[in-house]
Amino acid sequence: MTTITEIAPDVFRISTYVKAADLQFNQFLVRDDEPLLYHTGQNALFAETRMAVASLIDVAALRWIGFSHFESDECGSLNQWLAAAPHATPLAGLLAAATCINDFAIRPARVLEDAASFATGRHTFQFLVTPYVPHNWESSLLYDTTARVLFASDLLLQHGNPAPVIDDVLEPALRDFAAGQRSPFHDSIPWTPHTAATLERLAALAPGTLAIMHGAACVGDAAATLRGFSAGLRRLLAAPGASPSP
Image (cartoon, rainbow, N blue to C red; front, side, top):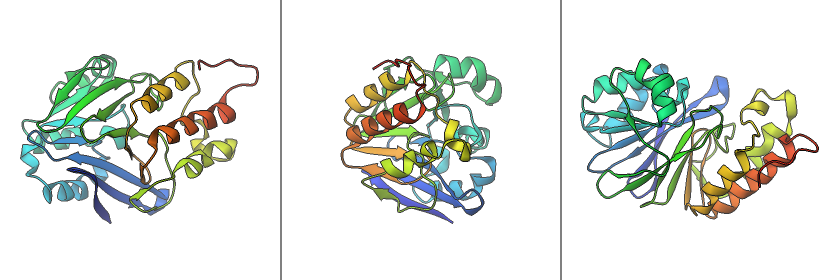
């Protein structure tokens, strides 16, 4: 079953719980003059997600499609969306466009540099290049500076079928890493020289809401949540004796 929740003004969380994976798959729609969809979901989720989007906007009016990195849940149904919305354009950094998107997609991406800003009408966004955060080398994230929503992709993943919005996701988000190799998600976020500095950069934005790909959206002191997540990852993942970037 797919549910819709407005997590910030004109920012909608479209969530499908997949019982076999015990995981929510969340897409986010920003309703504006030039509507933006963040995450496309897998091909298998396209029909349900399209129906949800159609209840909020005319699907053909969709203008921008963003995602963090090249994986099926992030952008698997991209071409179905591009076919349904003839004026829609993918958003990507240079690496993602060059290595994945412009070969895969039926229309080329708009390539954005780190810290580039663009507007969709009432909402202004900042594009953030975030290597290996959450994982792939071409990773990026998107920050809605108007609604103060950070589209956090796979960061702070939580299993299960939680409420759409909660104010404390830190403990469930660290659970897989604390489980070590007993969890296949233990290696989902690598600890690299970029990790701590990137998470601090995100925290310094002082977002009011974290739009999380799997699990509840987080509201409240999101900066403290991101810093707590960084500290937890350092404790659980950083090699003994290593000196990761602060």
